[in-house]
Length: 73
Image 1 (cartoon, rainbow, N blue to C red):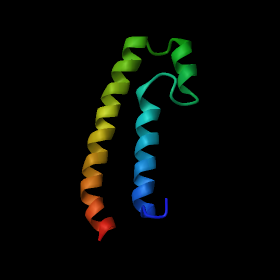
Image 2 (cartoon, rainbow, N blue to C red; image 1 turned 30 degrees about the vertical axis):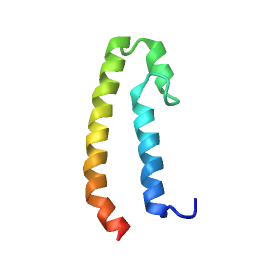
Image 3 (cartoon, helix red, strand yellow; image 1 turned 60 degrees about the vertical axis):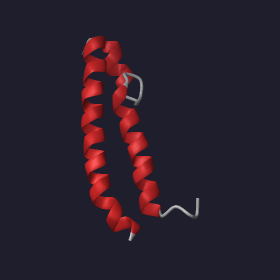
Image 4 (cartoon, rainbow, N blue to C red; image 1 turned 180 degrees about the vertical axis):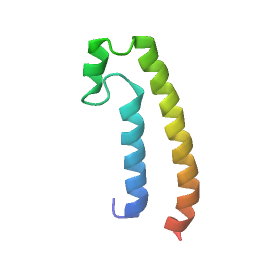
């Protein structure tokens, strides 16, 4: 994708990877181990995934709003 600036592309890829890895009990390598061991009940796993997902999105939007004008200039 030569027309997309590299910093913008990195932000898009990082956002997709970061959000996907915290939402579900099977999104990353160690997650199935935690999920299968019963360390966290299923409801707690999904609830915490939603909470951390919202925190991640808020921080991503704030960072993006501050960073994009610098990158696009």
